[in-house]
Each structure stands twice: as C-alpha cells, then as structure tokens.
Length: 310
Ligand code: COA
Ligand code: ZN
Image 1 (cartoon, rainbow, N blue to C red):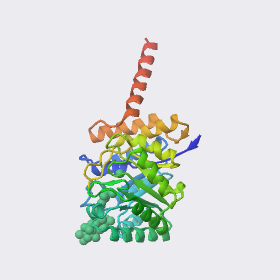
Image 2 (tube, rainbow, N blue to C red):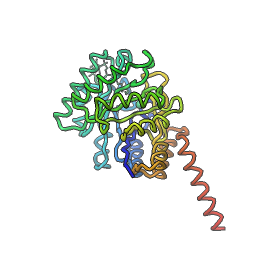
Image 3 (cartoon, helix red, strand yellow):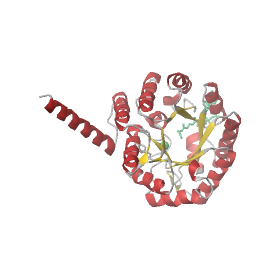
Image 4 (cartoon, helix red, strand yellow):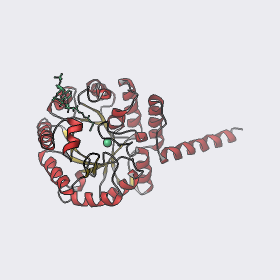
C-alpha cells in the first residue's frame, strides 16, 4: 500500500479557537493519545502573541514537556515572525511553520501585516529557521477563497508558493482556511502549483465548512498530493477568518485512505480514544462520519460480547 503522511493539527488549529481553554497537561494527554494511535506528526502549538490567541500562551512549556514525553514525535509549531521563531527555538522547536495569506486583508487581520510585509517576514523567518537547521513548512492561507476579498488569484498563489520554496520552505501547505474549495478547484490549483513546487513537497490543509473536505482530500490525492493536515474529531477554525468551521477530521481521512489502498500508520480505534478525550475536555460532541461508524462498530462488538457471555 502506498503511504500518505498526515499531520494532526488539532492541538493548534483545533484548540486555538475553542471557548474552553485546555490546560497544558490536557493538551499533552491529547497529543499522547494521538501519538499512541500512530500519528507521527502534529502541529503542537503556535508562538504568536498571547493577546491575539490566549489558548496558545503555554507554547513554550508545552513544547518542552512534549519533547520529554514524546521524543520521536514530529512536532511543528506555527510562528508568524522572527520573534516567534526566537521563542520557538528557545523552547527547543525542531520544526516551524510560517503563515502567509494570499490576500492583503487576510494578512492584516491575521498578523497585522500587508501582503508585502507578510511575504518578507515569512521569507526571513524561513531563511533564519533553515540556517538554524530547523525543518520548515509554509502555510499559504486562503489559497482558494478569502473571507474579505473573495476567490484568490491563482497566479499570485503560484508566485507566493515559489517564493516560499525559494526562501527555504521544505513543505508548502495549501490551506483552504475557510472551507470554500470544491474538488474541481483543488485539482486545478494543485496541478498549477505542481508546476512550481515538487508534488512531494506539497501538502493540503482543508476545512469542512461546506461538507466538502473529504471530497477535496480525494481530489488532492488523485492530483498526487500525499501530505495532509487533518484534525482529530474535526476540531478547528481560525479566529481571524469569519466563517471558518472545523477541519477535515483525521479519522475520516484515515478511513477513506485505508479503504482505498493507502496506508496511514494510524489506528482508528486509537484515534477515536483521542477524539473522545477531546470531547470530555471541550464539553461538546466531535467527529464526523467515521467517528459515528467507529462508535457503532464498538457498540456491536460490545453487544455481541455481552450476548456471548450470557
Ligand atoms: N509571540 C509573542 N509575542 C509577540 C510575537 C510573537 N511571535 N510577535 C510580537 N509579539 C509582541 C511584541 O513583542 C509586542 O509586545 P509588547 O506589546 O509587550 O511590546 C507586541 O506583541 C506587539 O508587537 P508587534 O510586532 O507590533 O505585533 P502586532 O501587534 O502587530 O501583532 C502578531 C503581530 C503577528 C504578533 C499578532 O498579530 C499575532 O500573534 N497573530 C497571531 C495570528 C494567529 O495565530 N492566527 C491563527 C493562526 S493562522
Ligand atoms: Zn486551518
């Protein structure tokens, strides 16, 4: 079976926008459950302004404790600028991600920089991170549609992808921040990006606002993408992008990929345990189709065991 590579972004993209703030210990337990399920890579936190995102204020503590608890787990952290990189490096980060939106307005709302400033800041951060030997990812946010400026221009997306690659991004993450993509647009944009970025270095980050995340993931797979962001239970959403709903659920992606002949290395029952832990802590129900199916399977197994036991 051909492998696909999944980064679970629940600890960052998932938790950054929740009304309930998880403690560092609970975040570590969630990441531990993900790692226990076979998740090899997570986005652990972000080194952003704690005023902008109070849920991520414990990034340094979390990263230090995570390195001790899960030394072989790949843990990326989002950094918006050189100050974020400096804080991440001091906390022992080995992998960072910058976030560049494709539009002026989204950059202003998210990181208080114009498109030009954000492009320069992201490139500087990537260059500095590579010179320190860190692994690097670059998010291209609102890669399909911007909540403020509408459909984003594909030539600009390509240009910025090429610029981030040249600045040292080892992975270009095409992000459908508000969940506005459809499979045909995914195909079109991935095909166009593949002309400037090697497919092996392209990843896709999807949100399920309109129920199309899984279909979009399939379109990306068919276009040759093998790297995916997803979030256990579908927890997610950007606080600065109105309308952004939850992420593509990791369990939905794993189930679809495994049922279609791709290997993920991730165990679905283990993933369900992580989703159910997040449910108890966030005090709301989570998960999509795959979670419902996994829970029904478990109930059937339990009923069968009960009947057998008399
Ligand atoms: N981490 C922590 N603090 C930071 C920081 C970082 N990466 N970058 C800047 N700061 C601090 C500055 O030191 C300064 O602190 P002070 O008021 O105590 O002097 C303060 O933030 C303002 O600095 P400035 O450079 O003017 O930043 P800003 O107010 O223009 O905000 C960001 C810019 C990028 C820091 C802020 O918009 C941000 O953190 N955005 C996060 C967005 C996000 O996480 N979005 C979701 C994920 S895509
Ligand atoms: Zn996202």
